[in-house]
Each structure stands twice: as structure tokens, then as C-alpha cells.
Image (cartoon, rainbow, N blue to C red; front, side, top):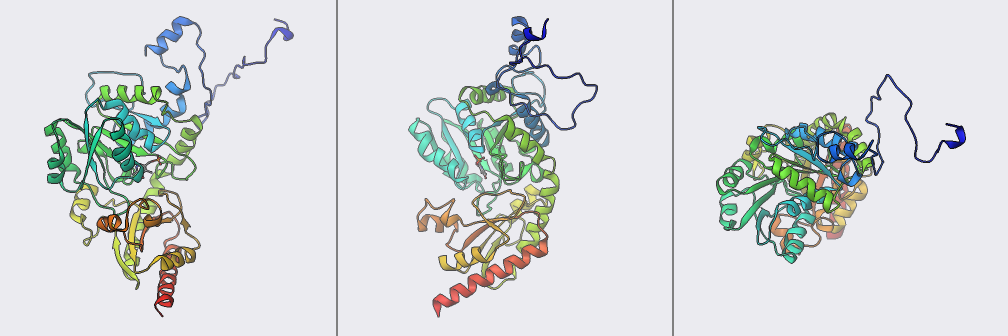
Length: 415
Ligand SMILES: *Cc1c(COP(=O)(O)O)cnc(C)c1O
């Protein structure tokens, strides 16, 4: 072939290499080329490994999903490659966001007329999905206190198909009675779905406690750097896994290669970040308890927590990185607190490598009335902290100063 007969358009071959990259390469390619039609058949039919079109799967999603599935104990097989009949087999799939993962569960598994029972303190968008969007499509949902198994049982109907809970709820850090709920789900043949975002597989492994599906907002701790939006859903049952795979690829809920690549990079340090953040959270909770102007502190493992015993039984000392507390302050005090905490980002997210604070009354729970928030125990002075990996002395200093600033603002107003 003469040089001028050789196309430079899309005819790249990689140089031969005896070595392999340490880091997973990024595969932004939308399509994958096959040798011929038979080879493509083999890929589509799962007889050969490979990919065809990125919405249907790509290496960066497979690599990341396998890692999270492995952490969760969901099995390590790749989406779309079924091996039915294998004991304990399960698999996971990446989605474009945590909400896409939750949507995939409903889109994959619900049928006309099905009813859902879910925790009443789920992530805000999830509550909206259950109370506004699913009813519009003919699915009814009942919301109940997930730490009360009797209340959940009372909400079940003959047509209840699925039970969805978070292990530790936002922002009140209430704990679901996972063991009781798993027993109930098994007895009544419900699909038991656990959102493990707050706890992460380091603190809790839902599959070991009877969950059928595990959902993550990978956006949070697992990716850990507030630079990707991603979700994950893993299934115990291969039939569920296949249905989820089909829902994600058909409804277009798939994850981008770059986001998966970044999240894998974040995941490398997840364990270190989690350990440090958890230690900091415990110390910060203790510190906040001693500050004048702090009315109460919520941290799941503590004796004064409403579900303390449940948390200790389920989480075995891993109470994660979230601390909530109530300032004796009105809006002016809260503003003063936030402004005084100059080293801590005021941002309505969680799981970043650094500490972030959020104010549920003006963000996640702003849609509720004052009374609705009060029923959940969320006052104007309620602050949620996602504790990061900073030096604990810096954190305690920062919170001491910020709480004092809130007190001064409140005092000024009174005087
Ligand atoms: C953030 C979050 C979600 C939604 O995840 P996105 O990635 O933001 O779509 C779902 N559940 C919990 C518990 C969350 O914290």
C-alpha cells in the first residue's frame, strides 16, 4: 500500500506493547468495531467479551461497577453477561446519577398497579419521585418511618411490590431497622432495596442483611471529590440484574466514561478518606456537645441518639462521617455561623474530601412547611455536617468560632 492510500481518518492502530498501563485507560469511544458480523454476533450474545455501543456498556463503567460490586459483595460479573443458576451471583451497573439508579429500579421492576412502601426520610428528590412523579404514572407509594417495622408492615398492601429505605436518613440520621425489614420483605415476597449512600460498604453491607438491590449515589463518598455525578445499582438476583441492565440502556440512564474514570480514581483512596472522616466525625460530635449554643447533637452511635441501639447493632462501630446538630439560633444566627466558618464550604452536598455544611431548612427541606420540618425535628438552627479529612484541630477550632459567632448574632438581636 502506498502512503497516500492509507487513510488517517479513524484507522488508528495502537503501537504494540509488552507492558500494560497501571491506570485504567479512559475509553470515550461511543462505538466498538468488530472483525466481521459473526464476531459482532458473538459479542451481542455474550459468547465473547466486548462492547458495541457505549450506551449499552463500556470498559470504564464495567471496571467501576465491578469494584463497587466487589465492595458490596454483589459478585463481580459484568453487566449483560448472565450466568443464571450460580449461587450468590449478583452484579452491578453504573448509572448517570444516584437518581438514575433509583429510577432504573422502578423502571426495571415495577408493573402496572404495583405499590411501593418507602422510608419517609429519603433523599429529597427520591421523595418527590415517589409522591409526585410515580403517582402520575399510576404507581402509588406509602411513606413510613423505616425504624418502625410494625409501621412498615401496616402500610403493606396485597399489591406492594417493593420496599425502599436508606440505612441512615438525611439529615436527621435516623437508622432503619434493616434486619427487621429484611425479615418482613422475605416473608411477604417484597423486593428489598437499600440506598447505602450514607453508610457505604465500609460501614454496612446490605446484601449480607437480606437486601435484594443496593443503590448508591457514587457522586458522594465513593467518588469523593465533588467532580462527578454518578450512580450504581447492584442486584443479588440475576433476573433483576438483567432487568436493570435493560432499563438503564433502554431509558438512557447510562454513565459517561469520563465520570466513571474519575470515580475510579477517587475510589482508590475511598477507604483512607472514609476512615479519617469517620474518626473526625466522632470527635467533632463530642466537641460540639460541649459548646454553649448547641442544643443537641445527632451522631448515630451515641447513647442519646433516638436509634442508638439499632445503629450500634447494625453498624458495628462504623457510624460514618455525617453529624447533625441544632444551633440555638434563628436565620441571622445561622448566617453568622456559616460566614464565620471560613474554612468549611457551605454547600448542599455530602461526601466531599473536605468538610461541608448544609442548612436543610433553606436547601434539601425548603419545600416543606415549618410544621412539616418540625415534625422531622428540623428547625431553623438545624445544621448538617459532612465531615471531611482535615486536621481535627482545625475543624474543632472552626466550629468553636462559628458557634460563638452564631451566639453573638443571636444576642445582638435580643439586645
Ligand atoms: C445524593 C443522594 C442521592 C441522589 O444521588 P445523585 O447522584 O445526586 O443523583 C440518592 N440518595 C442519597 C442518600 C443521596 O445522598
